[in-house]
Length: 102
Image (cartoon, rainbow, N blue to C red; front, side, top):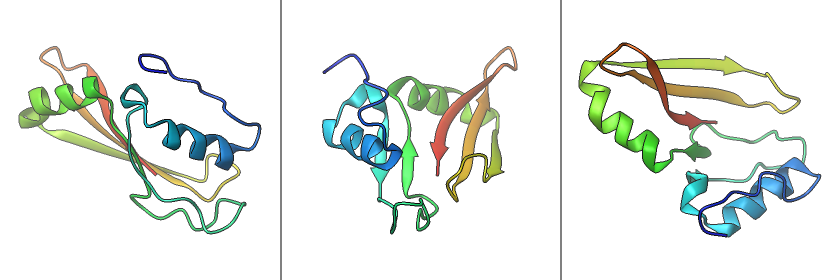
């Protein structure tokens, strides 16, 4: 599946995510994944899912010297997941998401 991402592998979210991890597709950007302890999503640990694409990594390396911004959101889905997004600003002060950490 190189070069493309299948977004929904299964109707069950946890199973779908696990299948995407098994695909090991670099385009997907999944760097680290630790499955939840139970099917409700409880047990997702901070840093249990890290997504960084190659483009996001390039942005981070190019613009992080200008500063970084970290944004946290909590419980925006039915799962007990905290989402942290790392952002940098380019030379025109446009923000670019560099990493998502659940």
